[in-house]
Image (cartoon, rainbow, N blue to C red):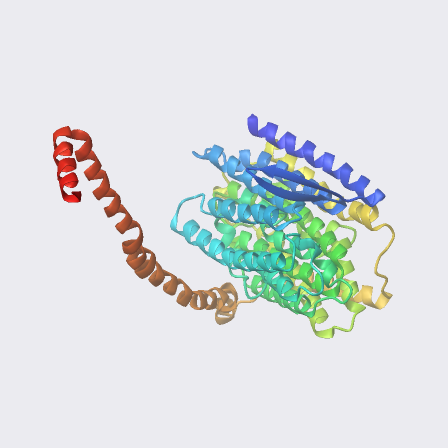
Length: 541
């Protein structure tokens, strides 16, 4: 019952932030404030973007908490799980409103700590290794952001948002930190590994919290490069989108396909930042969060009802068993593909149209092909798992329940109408206008992707092994990180537990033990003290 109260509170808080964002947008107002806690001052900033993002995080987290009472039913440590989720959401909220290095670190590191605890929630070998991969990969970004904050402080201020063009090194460090947090190439290996977390956590991580932190940081720093764009972001975003879509072609794990689609859409967001359109990037971040949270929640319903089966080839016939959930899953997938007048259509098509108006032919071509791949694997997911024949009729242990359908319906309307409302509230009638030929090309790629998903199946074993291993990226990442981990282990054994331990704490312990033993002797025997004092007086004379 108390978790329903938390869900209601988050929903009310989100609606309040929605109206605040509209007011701040219409009045072009920005507020700054300082919070003092434990002798430290944290600076926060409130504008239409931060309040609208707070609304998005509150809305999704409220529905995820309500949904988790169904998905996590019977878990022994369910209370611990809910408190971790609430702390996870609180860390993201603090990062959203931060405007100086101290408040940024509080939210940034809070996300890292709680994500590690949530990913290893099931306490098995796979969860532990996945959590460690995620934590170590994100620590690389944490090092970069510490260096970046140190450089910005050296330049005169903790306010990283107001870095100028002269702060090139600090911006590069923040860029590397955001690329790591948002799993851009070559830091992409940890994102599919984070699928070891419970599905409600995946709904939060892949929609509006952990992976979007790096994108949101770059949106805040976009005034540095918004006029000219950034070719590094342009190239890395397009490569990440194309690579993740290519890997998803040969994937049959339900949750990994959706995770790889997240990676692809993160690449699209970075690509739009590279074009110099931070508002379009935030637009796609907003709409993507709505249908991606819905996708993961629907996948959790299917997996939970089928007895834990995640291989889409073993599912089949989900439509007949879970009709309402299948319909909502289909709508969310169509929004991901960019079907006309759904949420993903408004934001993704604007970005692709913007790329067609620029002279960057190679990155723009990769983004268009990545959109084709998105249609291919999304429609293949629906065709194989939902509308095909029933393969495991006896595995379906539970039917549909109105208790979890309510949060699905809330996010369903967000995935359908969220893009339309954001477009008219925050962008007005402004849009990127292209010719009918360019519009026809986008529609042709959408139809081609659907056709490939229906009738083309890749069955080459060697090709599958390459795709399932993400192009051997996790192996290469492990090989590259192995020397650093071994050197750190050697320093720990020979340094921290070696001479440093011997010359520091060990010597201090021995000296303190000697003097404490002498003091105890003096305290327990006055006769000995008298003799020793007389001996010392005689020696001095």
